[in-house]
View 1 (cartoon, rainbow, N blue to C red):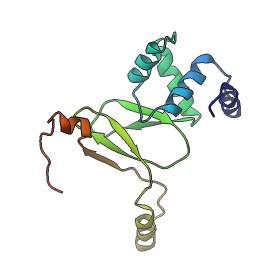
View 2: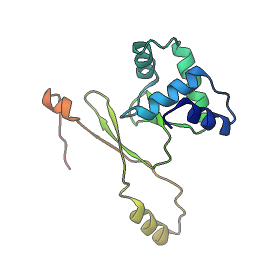
View 3: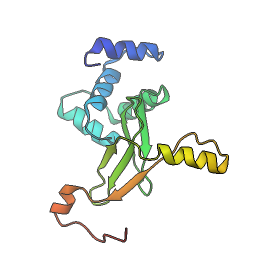
View 4: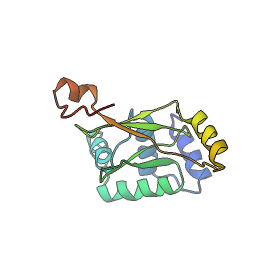
Amino acid sequence: MENNCEYENLLKESGLKKTKHRTTILEFLREAKQPVTAEQLYDALKEKNVSINLSTVYRTLETLQDKQLILKHTVTNENKAVFEYNNREHKHYLVCIGCKKILSVENCPLGDYEKYLEEKTDFIITGHKLDMYGYCSECQRKGLILNRGSK
């Protein structure tokens, strides 16, 4: 989906009109290496000389999330939500407690465990969430590690 025509089709299939802001935000999130906050998205768009207000960023993110075109993720113990393009892949997250960076992790290790739990408990599992906390390589280099804790 690297051209505006494909974003236009995606928006149309979701019952939304194509707007400059919607396509710009979808494109940015699709190309982003990690989930971003609304403020980070706003700052990045401003750096690219996109004329947009922070309130428009929030409204557009809410609209795109309502149509499941993007994902909103709230990290435990953090007050800010992050957003990423919904490429329909199940993900987990590594959260840096030093700089608050959030990295997506693919390849869920819990599939077999979910099946085991369903058989053992007669419980139908419809989903799960896994966030792992620690320090990114940049914070490690800066010596920001406060307490490794026990494993």
